[in-house]
Length: 331
Image (cartoon, rainbow, N blue to C red):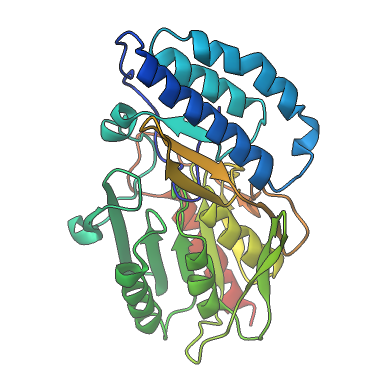
């Protein structure tokens, strides 16, 4: 099952849940959890037809398996199998052990200064996670801003505005979203606002069962209008895809790196009666160019791979810098 998320998208599991024998009280909690998950999908999935999945038949098939489960692991596996029938990201169930002891994420982390770690952030029902932000003006006179995850706007946005202010005299700007799994969707607009000059541009639309919400951008008085490069890779998901895909469609940014994760569904996270954590999508996301990002991702304008062992020189940054310099020469 895919489970990279708008607000999660960063955990892979390495520990198993409780394997103690099932008491009748615990069985009742698991059945209540199953019913809640099933009803939530039925009532809140953005497609009333659930993309053709016979949800009543799924319940009839799987609920008896929860009743017969001998322990929490088995009951949880049945519920996870139920969500897998949807074949979508952002539908997942996690035990407390999985959230408390996630396997460390592997993959790209840029060679940035030690002070890039702002804090360890607690967000909703998720475990603490490191938030990394770094900005500088590169030697080639290009502004650079790296963000590891879209959370804690109170701390992130002042640093982003500082990066924009420090880049006024640069030839272009690089927004590095590689291995950024997403987070708070509204931050895509908060950052996107600084890269547009015309009002009413939008990154795309969030299609819910009961309506549509547009991600409209509002130009700032100090918007940055010089060339913009956005860096993505297979670890860029959700809010990262919304921001990169939307600015690409608006022809405001050129995208470098490798295709993003294709996991762009807005989601919510809540606790179940049995104590597990349940994540579920509440909308589909369509970019302003009409692209469905779920399952497809954002395709770079220039495909540039950056393989382990990571370290300087960074070919993706180099390609972005080269393009920015070419824009200056073409003027």
